Length: 182
Image (cartoon, rainbow, N blue to C red; front, side):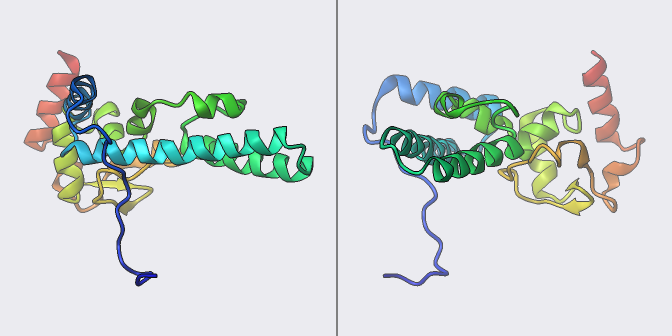
């Protein structure tokens, strides 16, 4: 067993390295969401894979006639977590967990949220603003573009207090406003 503080891979690489359709889909996602590389797509896929495995395990427990209270508790935990994160709605079931797509996971990233809220004019610019420390979530500076934003934090995304971008007359803010209108 290794050292518990050691960082480990958070993703699994594809089994078939040169599958044309997979490569094209990943490239489209990287461009659309302004990701740094395909590794970020693989991380999102791995996270969804964990959620789907947990849902399949719950279905197996239900079919095995295990203690219904235990199954209900674990189901509520999984669905509650996914609802808090914003991947599924409040009134969903296990089937909706199995139907999750990578795009839904990528939509919950801070980088995507900043761009969609109009704080940046493109996904690449939102990534730059985040890494340079211009974005805050709940008044707390966040410098990780892959940060998963919960439903409670969605409305708290703003420019960081000491950032020059808080000034409405900042040149980048006026460019963003012009792009938003036009």
